[in-house]
Length: 178
Image (cartoon, rainbow, N blue to C red; front, side, top):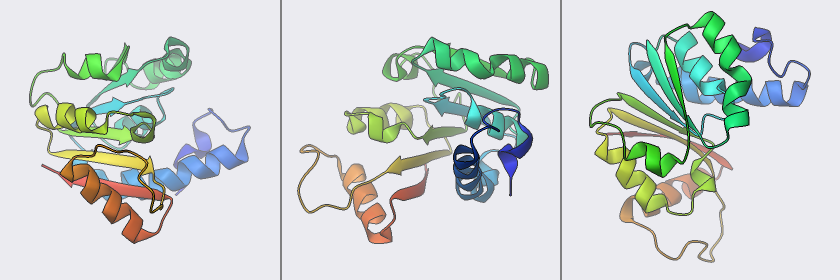
């Protein structure tokens, strides 16, 4: 499916459009039960690709967290014109923001393309789990290497790494149901 073909954003970059569409087909479409009529938290929102995808796919409201104000501001005019009152963007540190939400405030957490940028995976997983979502959807680049890259990993992280390595794919699309 060519979800991003008519969004007016990135239409000048065919590689990026194809990449976004493939990610949409492998992340959003198979997980619609975790998106339609669900309250979504999108971590590392960048400029709102996945906020847009979640809203377009039937989420009534999406909260995005993005550390860079200039990135968060890029898609806000388009989100506002298409989805007024259906989203909120929090500009700030993901760890600070996660600590400010109420338990069960979100049904689904999207952790798409940010997990591999975070060094403290255990803390991130704990904070996401404390929010008691129905699902956490993680999209991350993983490395298949016998040498230890991160020396301190939780059991959940170890299982995620082992699963991803067993899939023998660079991109792993994982859903962790609570």
